[in-house]
Image: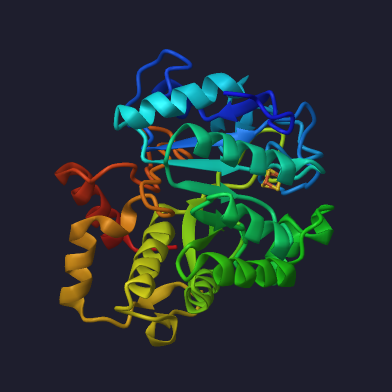
Length: 337
Ligand code: SF4
């Protein structure tokens, strides 16, 4: 294979992905079913998101994203690893996470083309807003899905965590503009966004944001805020598991069309008090375990992205065992916010 000059020499892979791609040796409690890659650069990201160790002003480790380490490898090695892991049936999708820096689009395009040249696999890109033309070019190059993160559930929180008040380049309205653009290029449900629970929003705020995304044809994926040393938000706590479970259920109901924000009830603290669906249906949904699995693109399971394997597990990376199911039911019956 001839290596185009635009292709970056190095790329990062999440630790779990690196093990599945046979770039590192190690044991995995839950193996990723998507290969998670991240663009590599010596410097940090030009943006300054308060929760992110890649942020410009963060003193956190440059090989971290959330609580996961992302060692760098030569791109050639990673491409070979992807090819083999797909042939072996270990990997079903590749997800490329992009930092914000001037050459990022050129790098993304070159990486996508290089993967497509070696093997057929669905590719997702998670990036800051590019322009409409760039979104179209990525689709043309064979990207299957695109994610543009909102992260925060309200415009005020967004501004504090990623926008002007955080010294970042992002604007709430522009994220929605680009998400709309992405839906028109990739189709409904193929543009996604990340929402982080635990940035100071209420349950009402979060459920409202989920409904807004779904109404636009955007697929929202949920994450639990994870404090990382060296970041602006390092002292904040993770969200209470009960709050997270309620939001997972609300997301499931909205996405499956069984419920909607307008039919849900909230108490005086803006916590969900009634999902607006029959109790029997709700019980079946909780017992299925489906709402509590990692959310996102097909075959995305991100093992232990925002939790230690010892728990509490916010997003389950594989189907839920009986023990886990009874743990969840206990968490649900505890109530509280
Ligand atoms: S744009 Fe992404 S990588 Fe950059 S600081 Fe924000 S979350 Fe981190």
